Length: 167
Image (cartoon, rainbow, N blue to C red; front, side, top):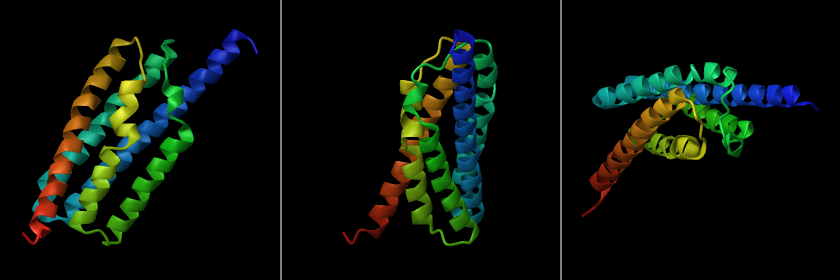
């Protein structure tokens, strides 16, 4: 295999992984939007998370151009397409459960905690590197929001546990 073919294979694989990441963000946005509808008392919280996940997907889209310009997403191979697709399927199961109104506020919060602390959300930008200034901006936004989301959801979960405590 010659070098242009190898680069083409790598580029296509990186585009596919990027598409899976965008799908992940949009799936989370859909899920959180459903939670906003299901739980009016927490509507503002879930709507904000949904809006931010949509924003994450939006800022990931220009990364396709970065790849086409010849930048490589170094270490992206640590995130297998099948793993990301599997995580997306879990979010889609949660979406189906929410659509069928089987989800409680506690389950919604637990789901969000699992998804916001998943390897995709918590480790991707720590592992994957790229020299593109666009990538650096995208990574900075994700790092900020990802940490905030995980912390806010964890605090919400702890508050729920405290309310159930018999003490």
